[in-house]
Length: 245
Image 1 (spheres, rainbow, N blue to C red):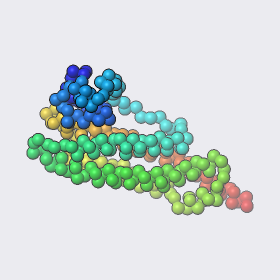
Image 2: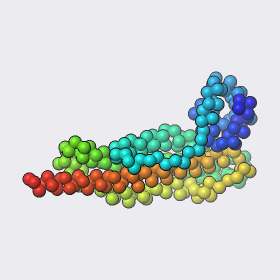
Image 3: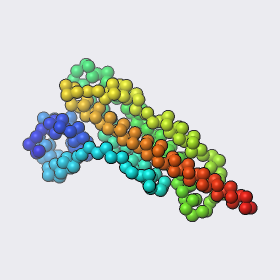
Image 4: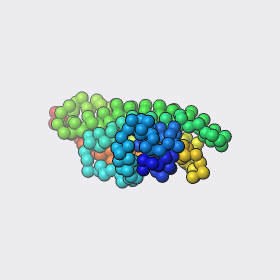
């Protein structure tokens, strides 16, 4: 693999571009260089780079979380948020920012993506932090109260301010956040005649959207139902406690 050009390595599997990126190799700046030449320029161990490239597989298995308690599900979701914000989105943003089309056919696409994607990222990050600070925090309080059977009075006032059903409805409104990007890219439609750079951009955007769909499914179909049951149990316990008094 060391004698192959970067352009060929990425063309073979677009995910290779993200692996190279984390080694500090922006594929679009070294397309005609071989992997060996780039590793030499960057002072990288070519065997290590090849090892990571060979690990790349496409995995569509959805994580089985239904049997997990809500606090572990939330930790899984928070970890996904971290990966999205610290790794996935900065990489895609760099890909879009660095795209300089050589043909007027792609000028408007590049311009629109450079305008819309940063707005999408800003809105997405705001949504994530709000979700963690409000929804996740509330569900964790429910779980803690259920486990140690303390703090019912404090939680009672929290339950007056929060509504899981409302959160669920608002969450569904955010489930199609990439609608505008799909429109710009014509549902990520491209073929082998399109520039490699735009094929990588589209592939990464599409892969990210699939990850968001899986993430939303975990929240909508696993976390929310569990949290609603937990909330009802706490309400019943609080009601029983009030009646005893």
